[in-house]
Length: 337
Image (cartoon, one colour):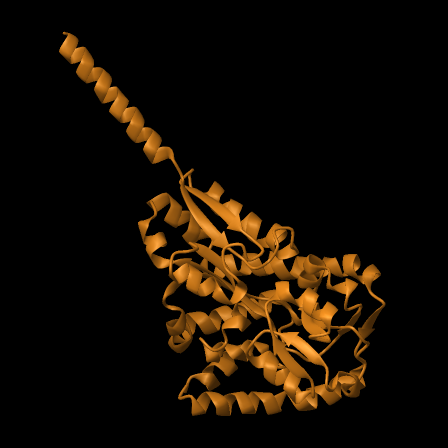
């Protein structure tokens, strides 16, 4: 009798222990270069991550490592691939060299009407062009989404109203098409991560940056670069969320379903809506800290467009052809639909 009771007790303990082990969520590390209180983090990434957690039936817990605490912006992709981070936010322009075909998103004159249209275009490129997907195959791509150009502008230490004002200025940008865009306009592009911009402006290393309302509000650049020039003929900024493939494959079915249900085209559109469209509300918050909010005149914008529109498209097509990337015309076609 005592033996049966002991076996029953041990059996129950084993079941309870197994149940407790099964109930413990898998903890994932999510890396981003942006601050935790940045608009895109508070209103885009965090709600999206919490949504995945809530739909995972208790199988997932996602810890956010913001402000480059786990990996700097240009190293996030490698950190995910190497398992330092399980997931991460990717500013795609920083990785133009890894996937040159996606430089197309930054070309002037290709601007979408809004972030949703831009995201629809860039997702179609990713989904339908194998030559675009292949360089990103090392990690699992969860979302690819776009901003709208209404929220992209020049932010400078001195006012910019004309091409002549911009000429010779050292302007921070991400790699890829924005480098050619600035060069065509007579400025000097300087590639650097967002967290390094404030001090570089203070020290005179740069004279300004290509920015957006979320970036400017999060890093308080208006303190050191109080002039914004809007209505510039510039391409979209695109972002991605990626995940380590081994980590994904190891997850329980409930966790995978929660991630899958919030990824792909639907997840990309959700992030675009929350990240970009809502972020334009930040203009009201940033504007009082500026010395001047300049809107490029229609005539002046036409002067800029002559330099950065079709000429840069043709130059990009030639460059892609020289690299043997024959799908460039197809990509450009998707981006103009």
